[in-house]
Structures are given as structure tokens and as C-alpha cells.
Image (cartoon, rainbow, N blue to C red):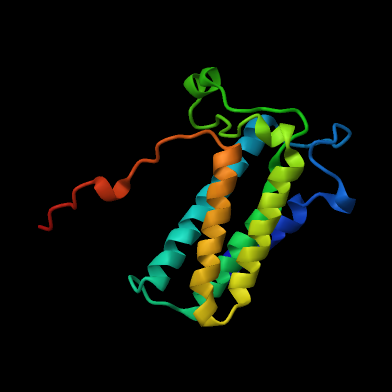
Length: 179
């Protein structure tokens, strides 16, 4: 768990924009391609989702609710949300059907609205960063409420800035036969 938290915190520190600079400022130079940045964004979102699933399993009693693990997962989400806006390049690379057909694994899921309203996008990410951070240090009886606020923030951002798509529901697969 410490490795996850340390890695997420280091990633946030490295990717955060210095001195109030914004990713939409064309004078900023990225050392990664659009494809690398897109893969990083998708991996970060997958990691946030995996942490969120585990948090809900803990809060719902499906798995052991270890306070240290719960706090660490929330702090990791917080660090990733702080880093997330820094993974957008000044030059837009929004979702397109052509890009999805050419390479569905590296296609950007971002709508043009990310670049058209970067300040609004960044504000939502930073609000989620703060909520996840607050949840990571909140008294146990307040964590679930903050996690629900965080999920609402995520859904709001996805509705405004991410292309709609169908997730594959792994829960819909039949359980394997136990031999």
C-alpha cells in the first residue's frame, strides 16, 4: 500500500503544472506524445476506478475494511486527481471515430470541451482531488458520504468532458465451474 501511495504522490508532484502554468498554454513543451499522454490518462483513470471499487467493497463489507488500506487508496486517488489535468497537451487530441477504429487502445476519450473549457475541467479535477484528500483523513463515520460526493464529482466531469462508451461488465460473466 505504501508503494501505491508513494508512486501516486510522486506522479502527482512530477506532473503538476509549475507556477500556475496551464496545459493550454502553447508555450509549455511536453516530452511525451499525444499517444503516451492518452495512455497515461487512461491508465490513471483505470487505477482510480480500481481503487474506487476496492473502497466500495471495504465500505460495503465485501472485503476487510482496513483503515490503513482505505486511507491509502483514498490518498492515492487524491494524488492521481491532482496529476490528471497535467496529462493534457496544449494541442487538442479529442476522441474521433477514425482514431477509435485505427487504435481503440490508445484513442483519447476526451471531448473537445476539455480544451474549450480547460479551466472548468481543471477545477472539477481539483475539487475531486480535495474531496478524496478530505475522505482520506476524515473520521470513519464521514468517509462514505465523502466517497459518494467524490463519485458525483467524477460522474459530472465524465458527462461534460468524456465521450460516452459502454464498459464491459465483468460481473455479467458466468462464474467458472468449480471442479
